Length: 330
Image (cartoon, rainbow, N blue to C red; front, side):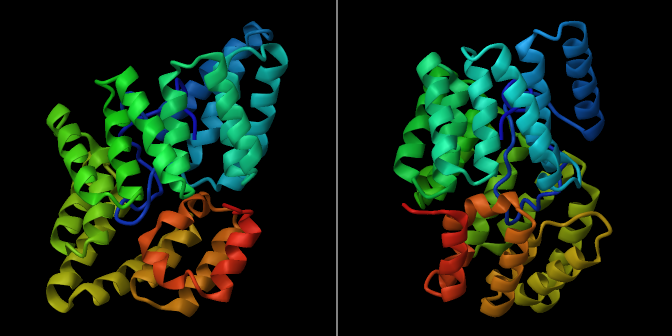
């Protein structure tokens, strides 16, 4: 999603489980739910003081674009507020590239693919050197499976802002999404050379190592990510998964992760559970939970095509029907 100053933080304390998901994290400093609430308050006050200030409404839109990643608020509750704020900003100044970026995030999360692409391209038409537009367009292109084009935009973002940690990290993520693992690993290592405590890269490494079946590095990276994010729920789940893995192996650890998710009091995206069942090669349960994720309008649906754990489902009628409902036509 977009940012509050094109995205919020490389170290989100969020509801995504970094061992399996592809978080939308940002290029600036650490963010907390309290910090987000304060940001929304400032943007709202700015809009109240100057109702013609389009950037204030962009800030409000970007808050609603990302808050579900940092707090247990379902995206479905955020989308109408994101839409209202972005459209208000557009009514005030249609020439701001940031306005079209905000609109693109609404359309992306609403699975309105042609509108999403139009708004991204309009943002880049207004400012061809808008690094964050290249960054998020590129990353989102890789999420929906258009990986070659996406990597080109991600590389352009790094060219425009070579010291931006998030751009560097997400170039690695885009390469991983394109299944270019050696290049991805090299890019992740480069990012960690720039900042050894950049939490987002450890989150991406958990995905890479798990994809490759390297389970001890997966757990180690997961723990590092959760520690840097001070994510106590993830730390508890990781510790239990690590304990079970050492005692009984990988499949038992995955079963324990599923149980942990189902026991949490806070909202857990059904796609997280679908992914874990997929790691167990349980087709029936994976499809059932994917359908629940679709009904919940899970933002994880956006990465369905590049999640390797779902490869074994691609030919299943239920999976094909899911892609049809999502509107994937490429």
